[in-house]
Length: 340
Ligand SMILES: [Zn+2]
Image 1 (cartoon, rainbow, N blue to C red):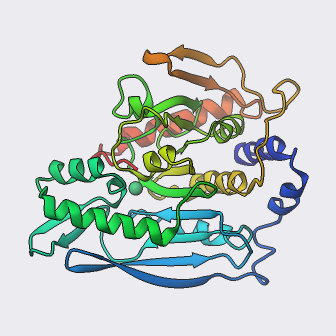
Image 2: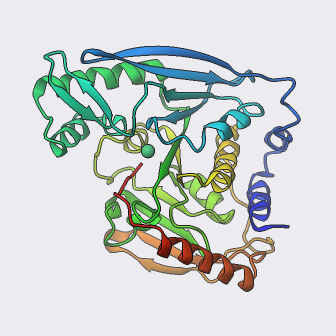
Image 3: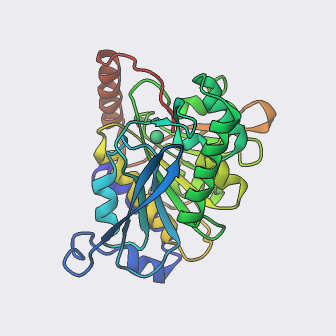
């Protein structure tokens, strides 16, 4: 059994208390290819002088509680994986399909050029900060972005009871799970941080729900539980969801790391498909247990755990993985920081 499949097994064990769920999620993703298909539709929302195009791809399976969301047009490593998972899981995939990069390049109604980050538009404070950071702020432009944000939220119908799976890619060496540790740029946004030994720090899942955190941690994924009350309001979808009682899992993977993104996404879909709250089984007696976690208490009561080791992950494998990661980091230039 390899490292990845053992982690998925652990996740399955955590969910096996829900028999109905398990029958459903244990289906082979390829087996359903002939019997389910997805439909794609587009919609447009006005922003300044432009119409921004979005594409919605829906599973043909019943249920509308899962919204997979991509807000950064260029962060597309996950797209084929999401489509595959929608063949065996209900849900909708809503992505920006207007061409562009992380920031949209736009013209305001008053013909001023500006750019904006769609993942900073979910609060007035976030919009203002993002525009000011790039010297584009004016009350008129902020109002246009605010109207666009409102129209988007109406269109995707985000509300309590839904689960959002956001997909993002980052670059090696910039924003990572370490950003949520003491002294990191996102220190105030994280309540619990679990770093899995041997895992690439750029690959992690940020969640708003403690049960999701515990399940992903037990399954051996790098995981952050957002501090929903105290996370600074940066206008991101994660903070919006955290403050509005919407369960949210942000699957953050290094550009091009499709294999790890698939593992994380599959886990996120399985957790999002759970129809009721579940409790993780006792850790004792589980083949995949967390051994001797080092817990340090961060300022203001936040806890950081790290050093969890999968028993299937032999020391030899770990050091091999770590040196692989180290080599990669040493040979890759440090790029501009990109986050969520
Ligand atoms: Zn992103």
